[in-house]
Length: 240
Image 1 (tube, rainbow, N blue to C red):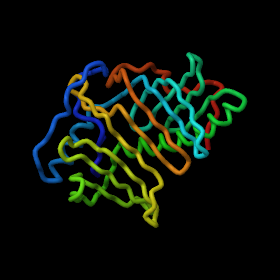
Image 2: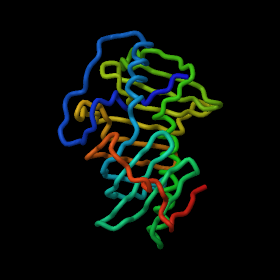
Image 3: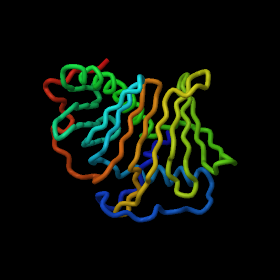
């Protein structure tokens, strides 16, 4: 199995997103060599934490803009805690046992639940895609965009990854149904080199249920995470 974290480079130091350097560029190389670089980049990543600006857009067009804190322990744990004017609006926690959401009461609760359910679905897909478990992908160069395109069938779902050849950074994932229709898209951009680490600062997840836009800052990789970082709040509800 080819297993890699496409968005994560080889860790050489722990860093925060205060100063950035240009993204490294690579000369033309065979596909196997490019995939080896992607795989090597993944192995040292243990934790990710960051502050974020979060925009949740529900399928009916309603939008919530929030400040947030994100922590991840790939591939099965993530937590997103969102605030508005310093007050917690919702807390979403993903563990191997499922997804939990804590949100306020009233109309905002209904919208947060809808957006949170959407975000939960997208987060599950995001984590699965970022782990990059391609068994035997087909690979081809796109003559128009110059991107390296990986594709693999997983049951009735086709997973497509588009990788920028120059920087070897994944730019977009798609999940398509048996009829070839897009059901989920994950876009990664605003890559920066932070203390030797290439990292996307903008992530956009799109499905027919809505959109989740995460813009990161103060990113820390392989920092210490408290033991209870992924313990859902007592008032959190487990999502279906």
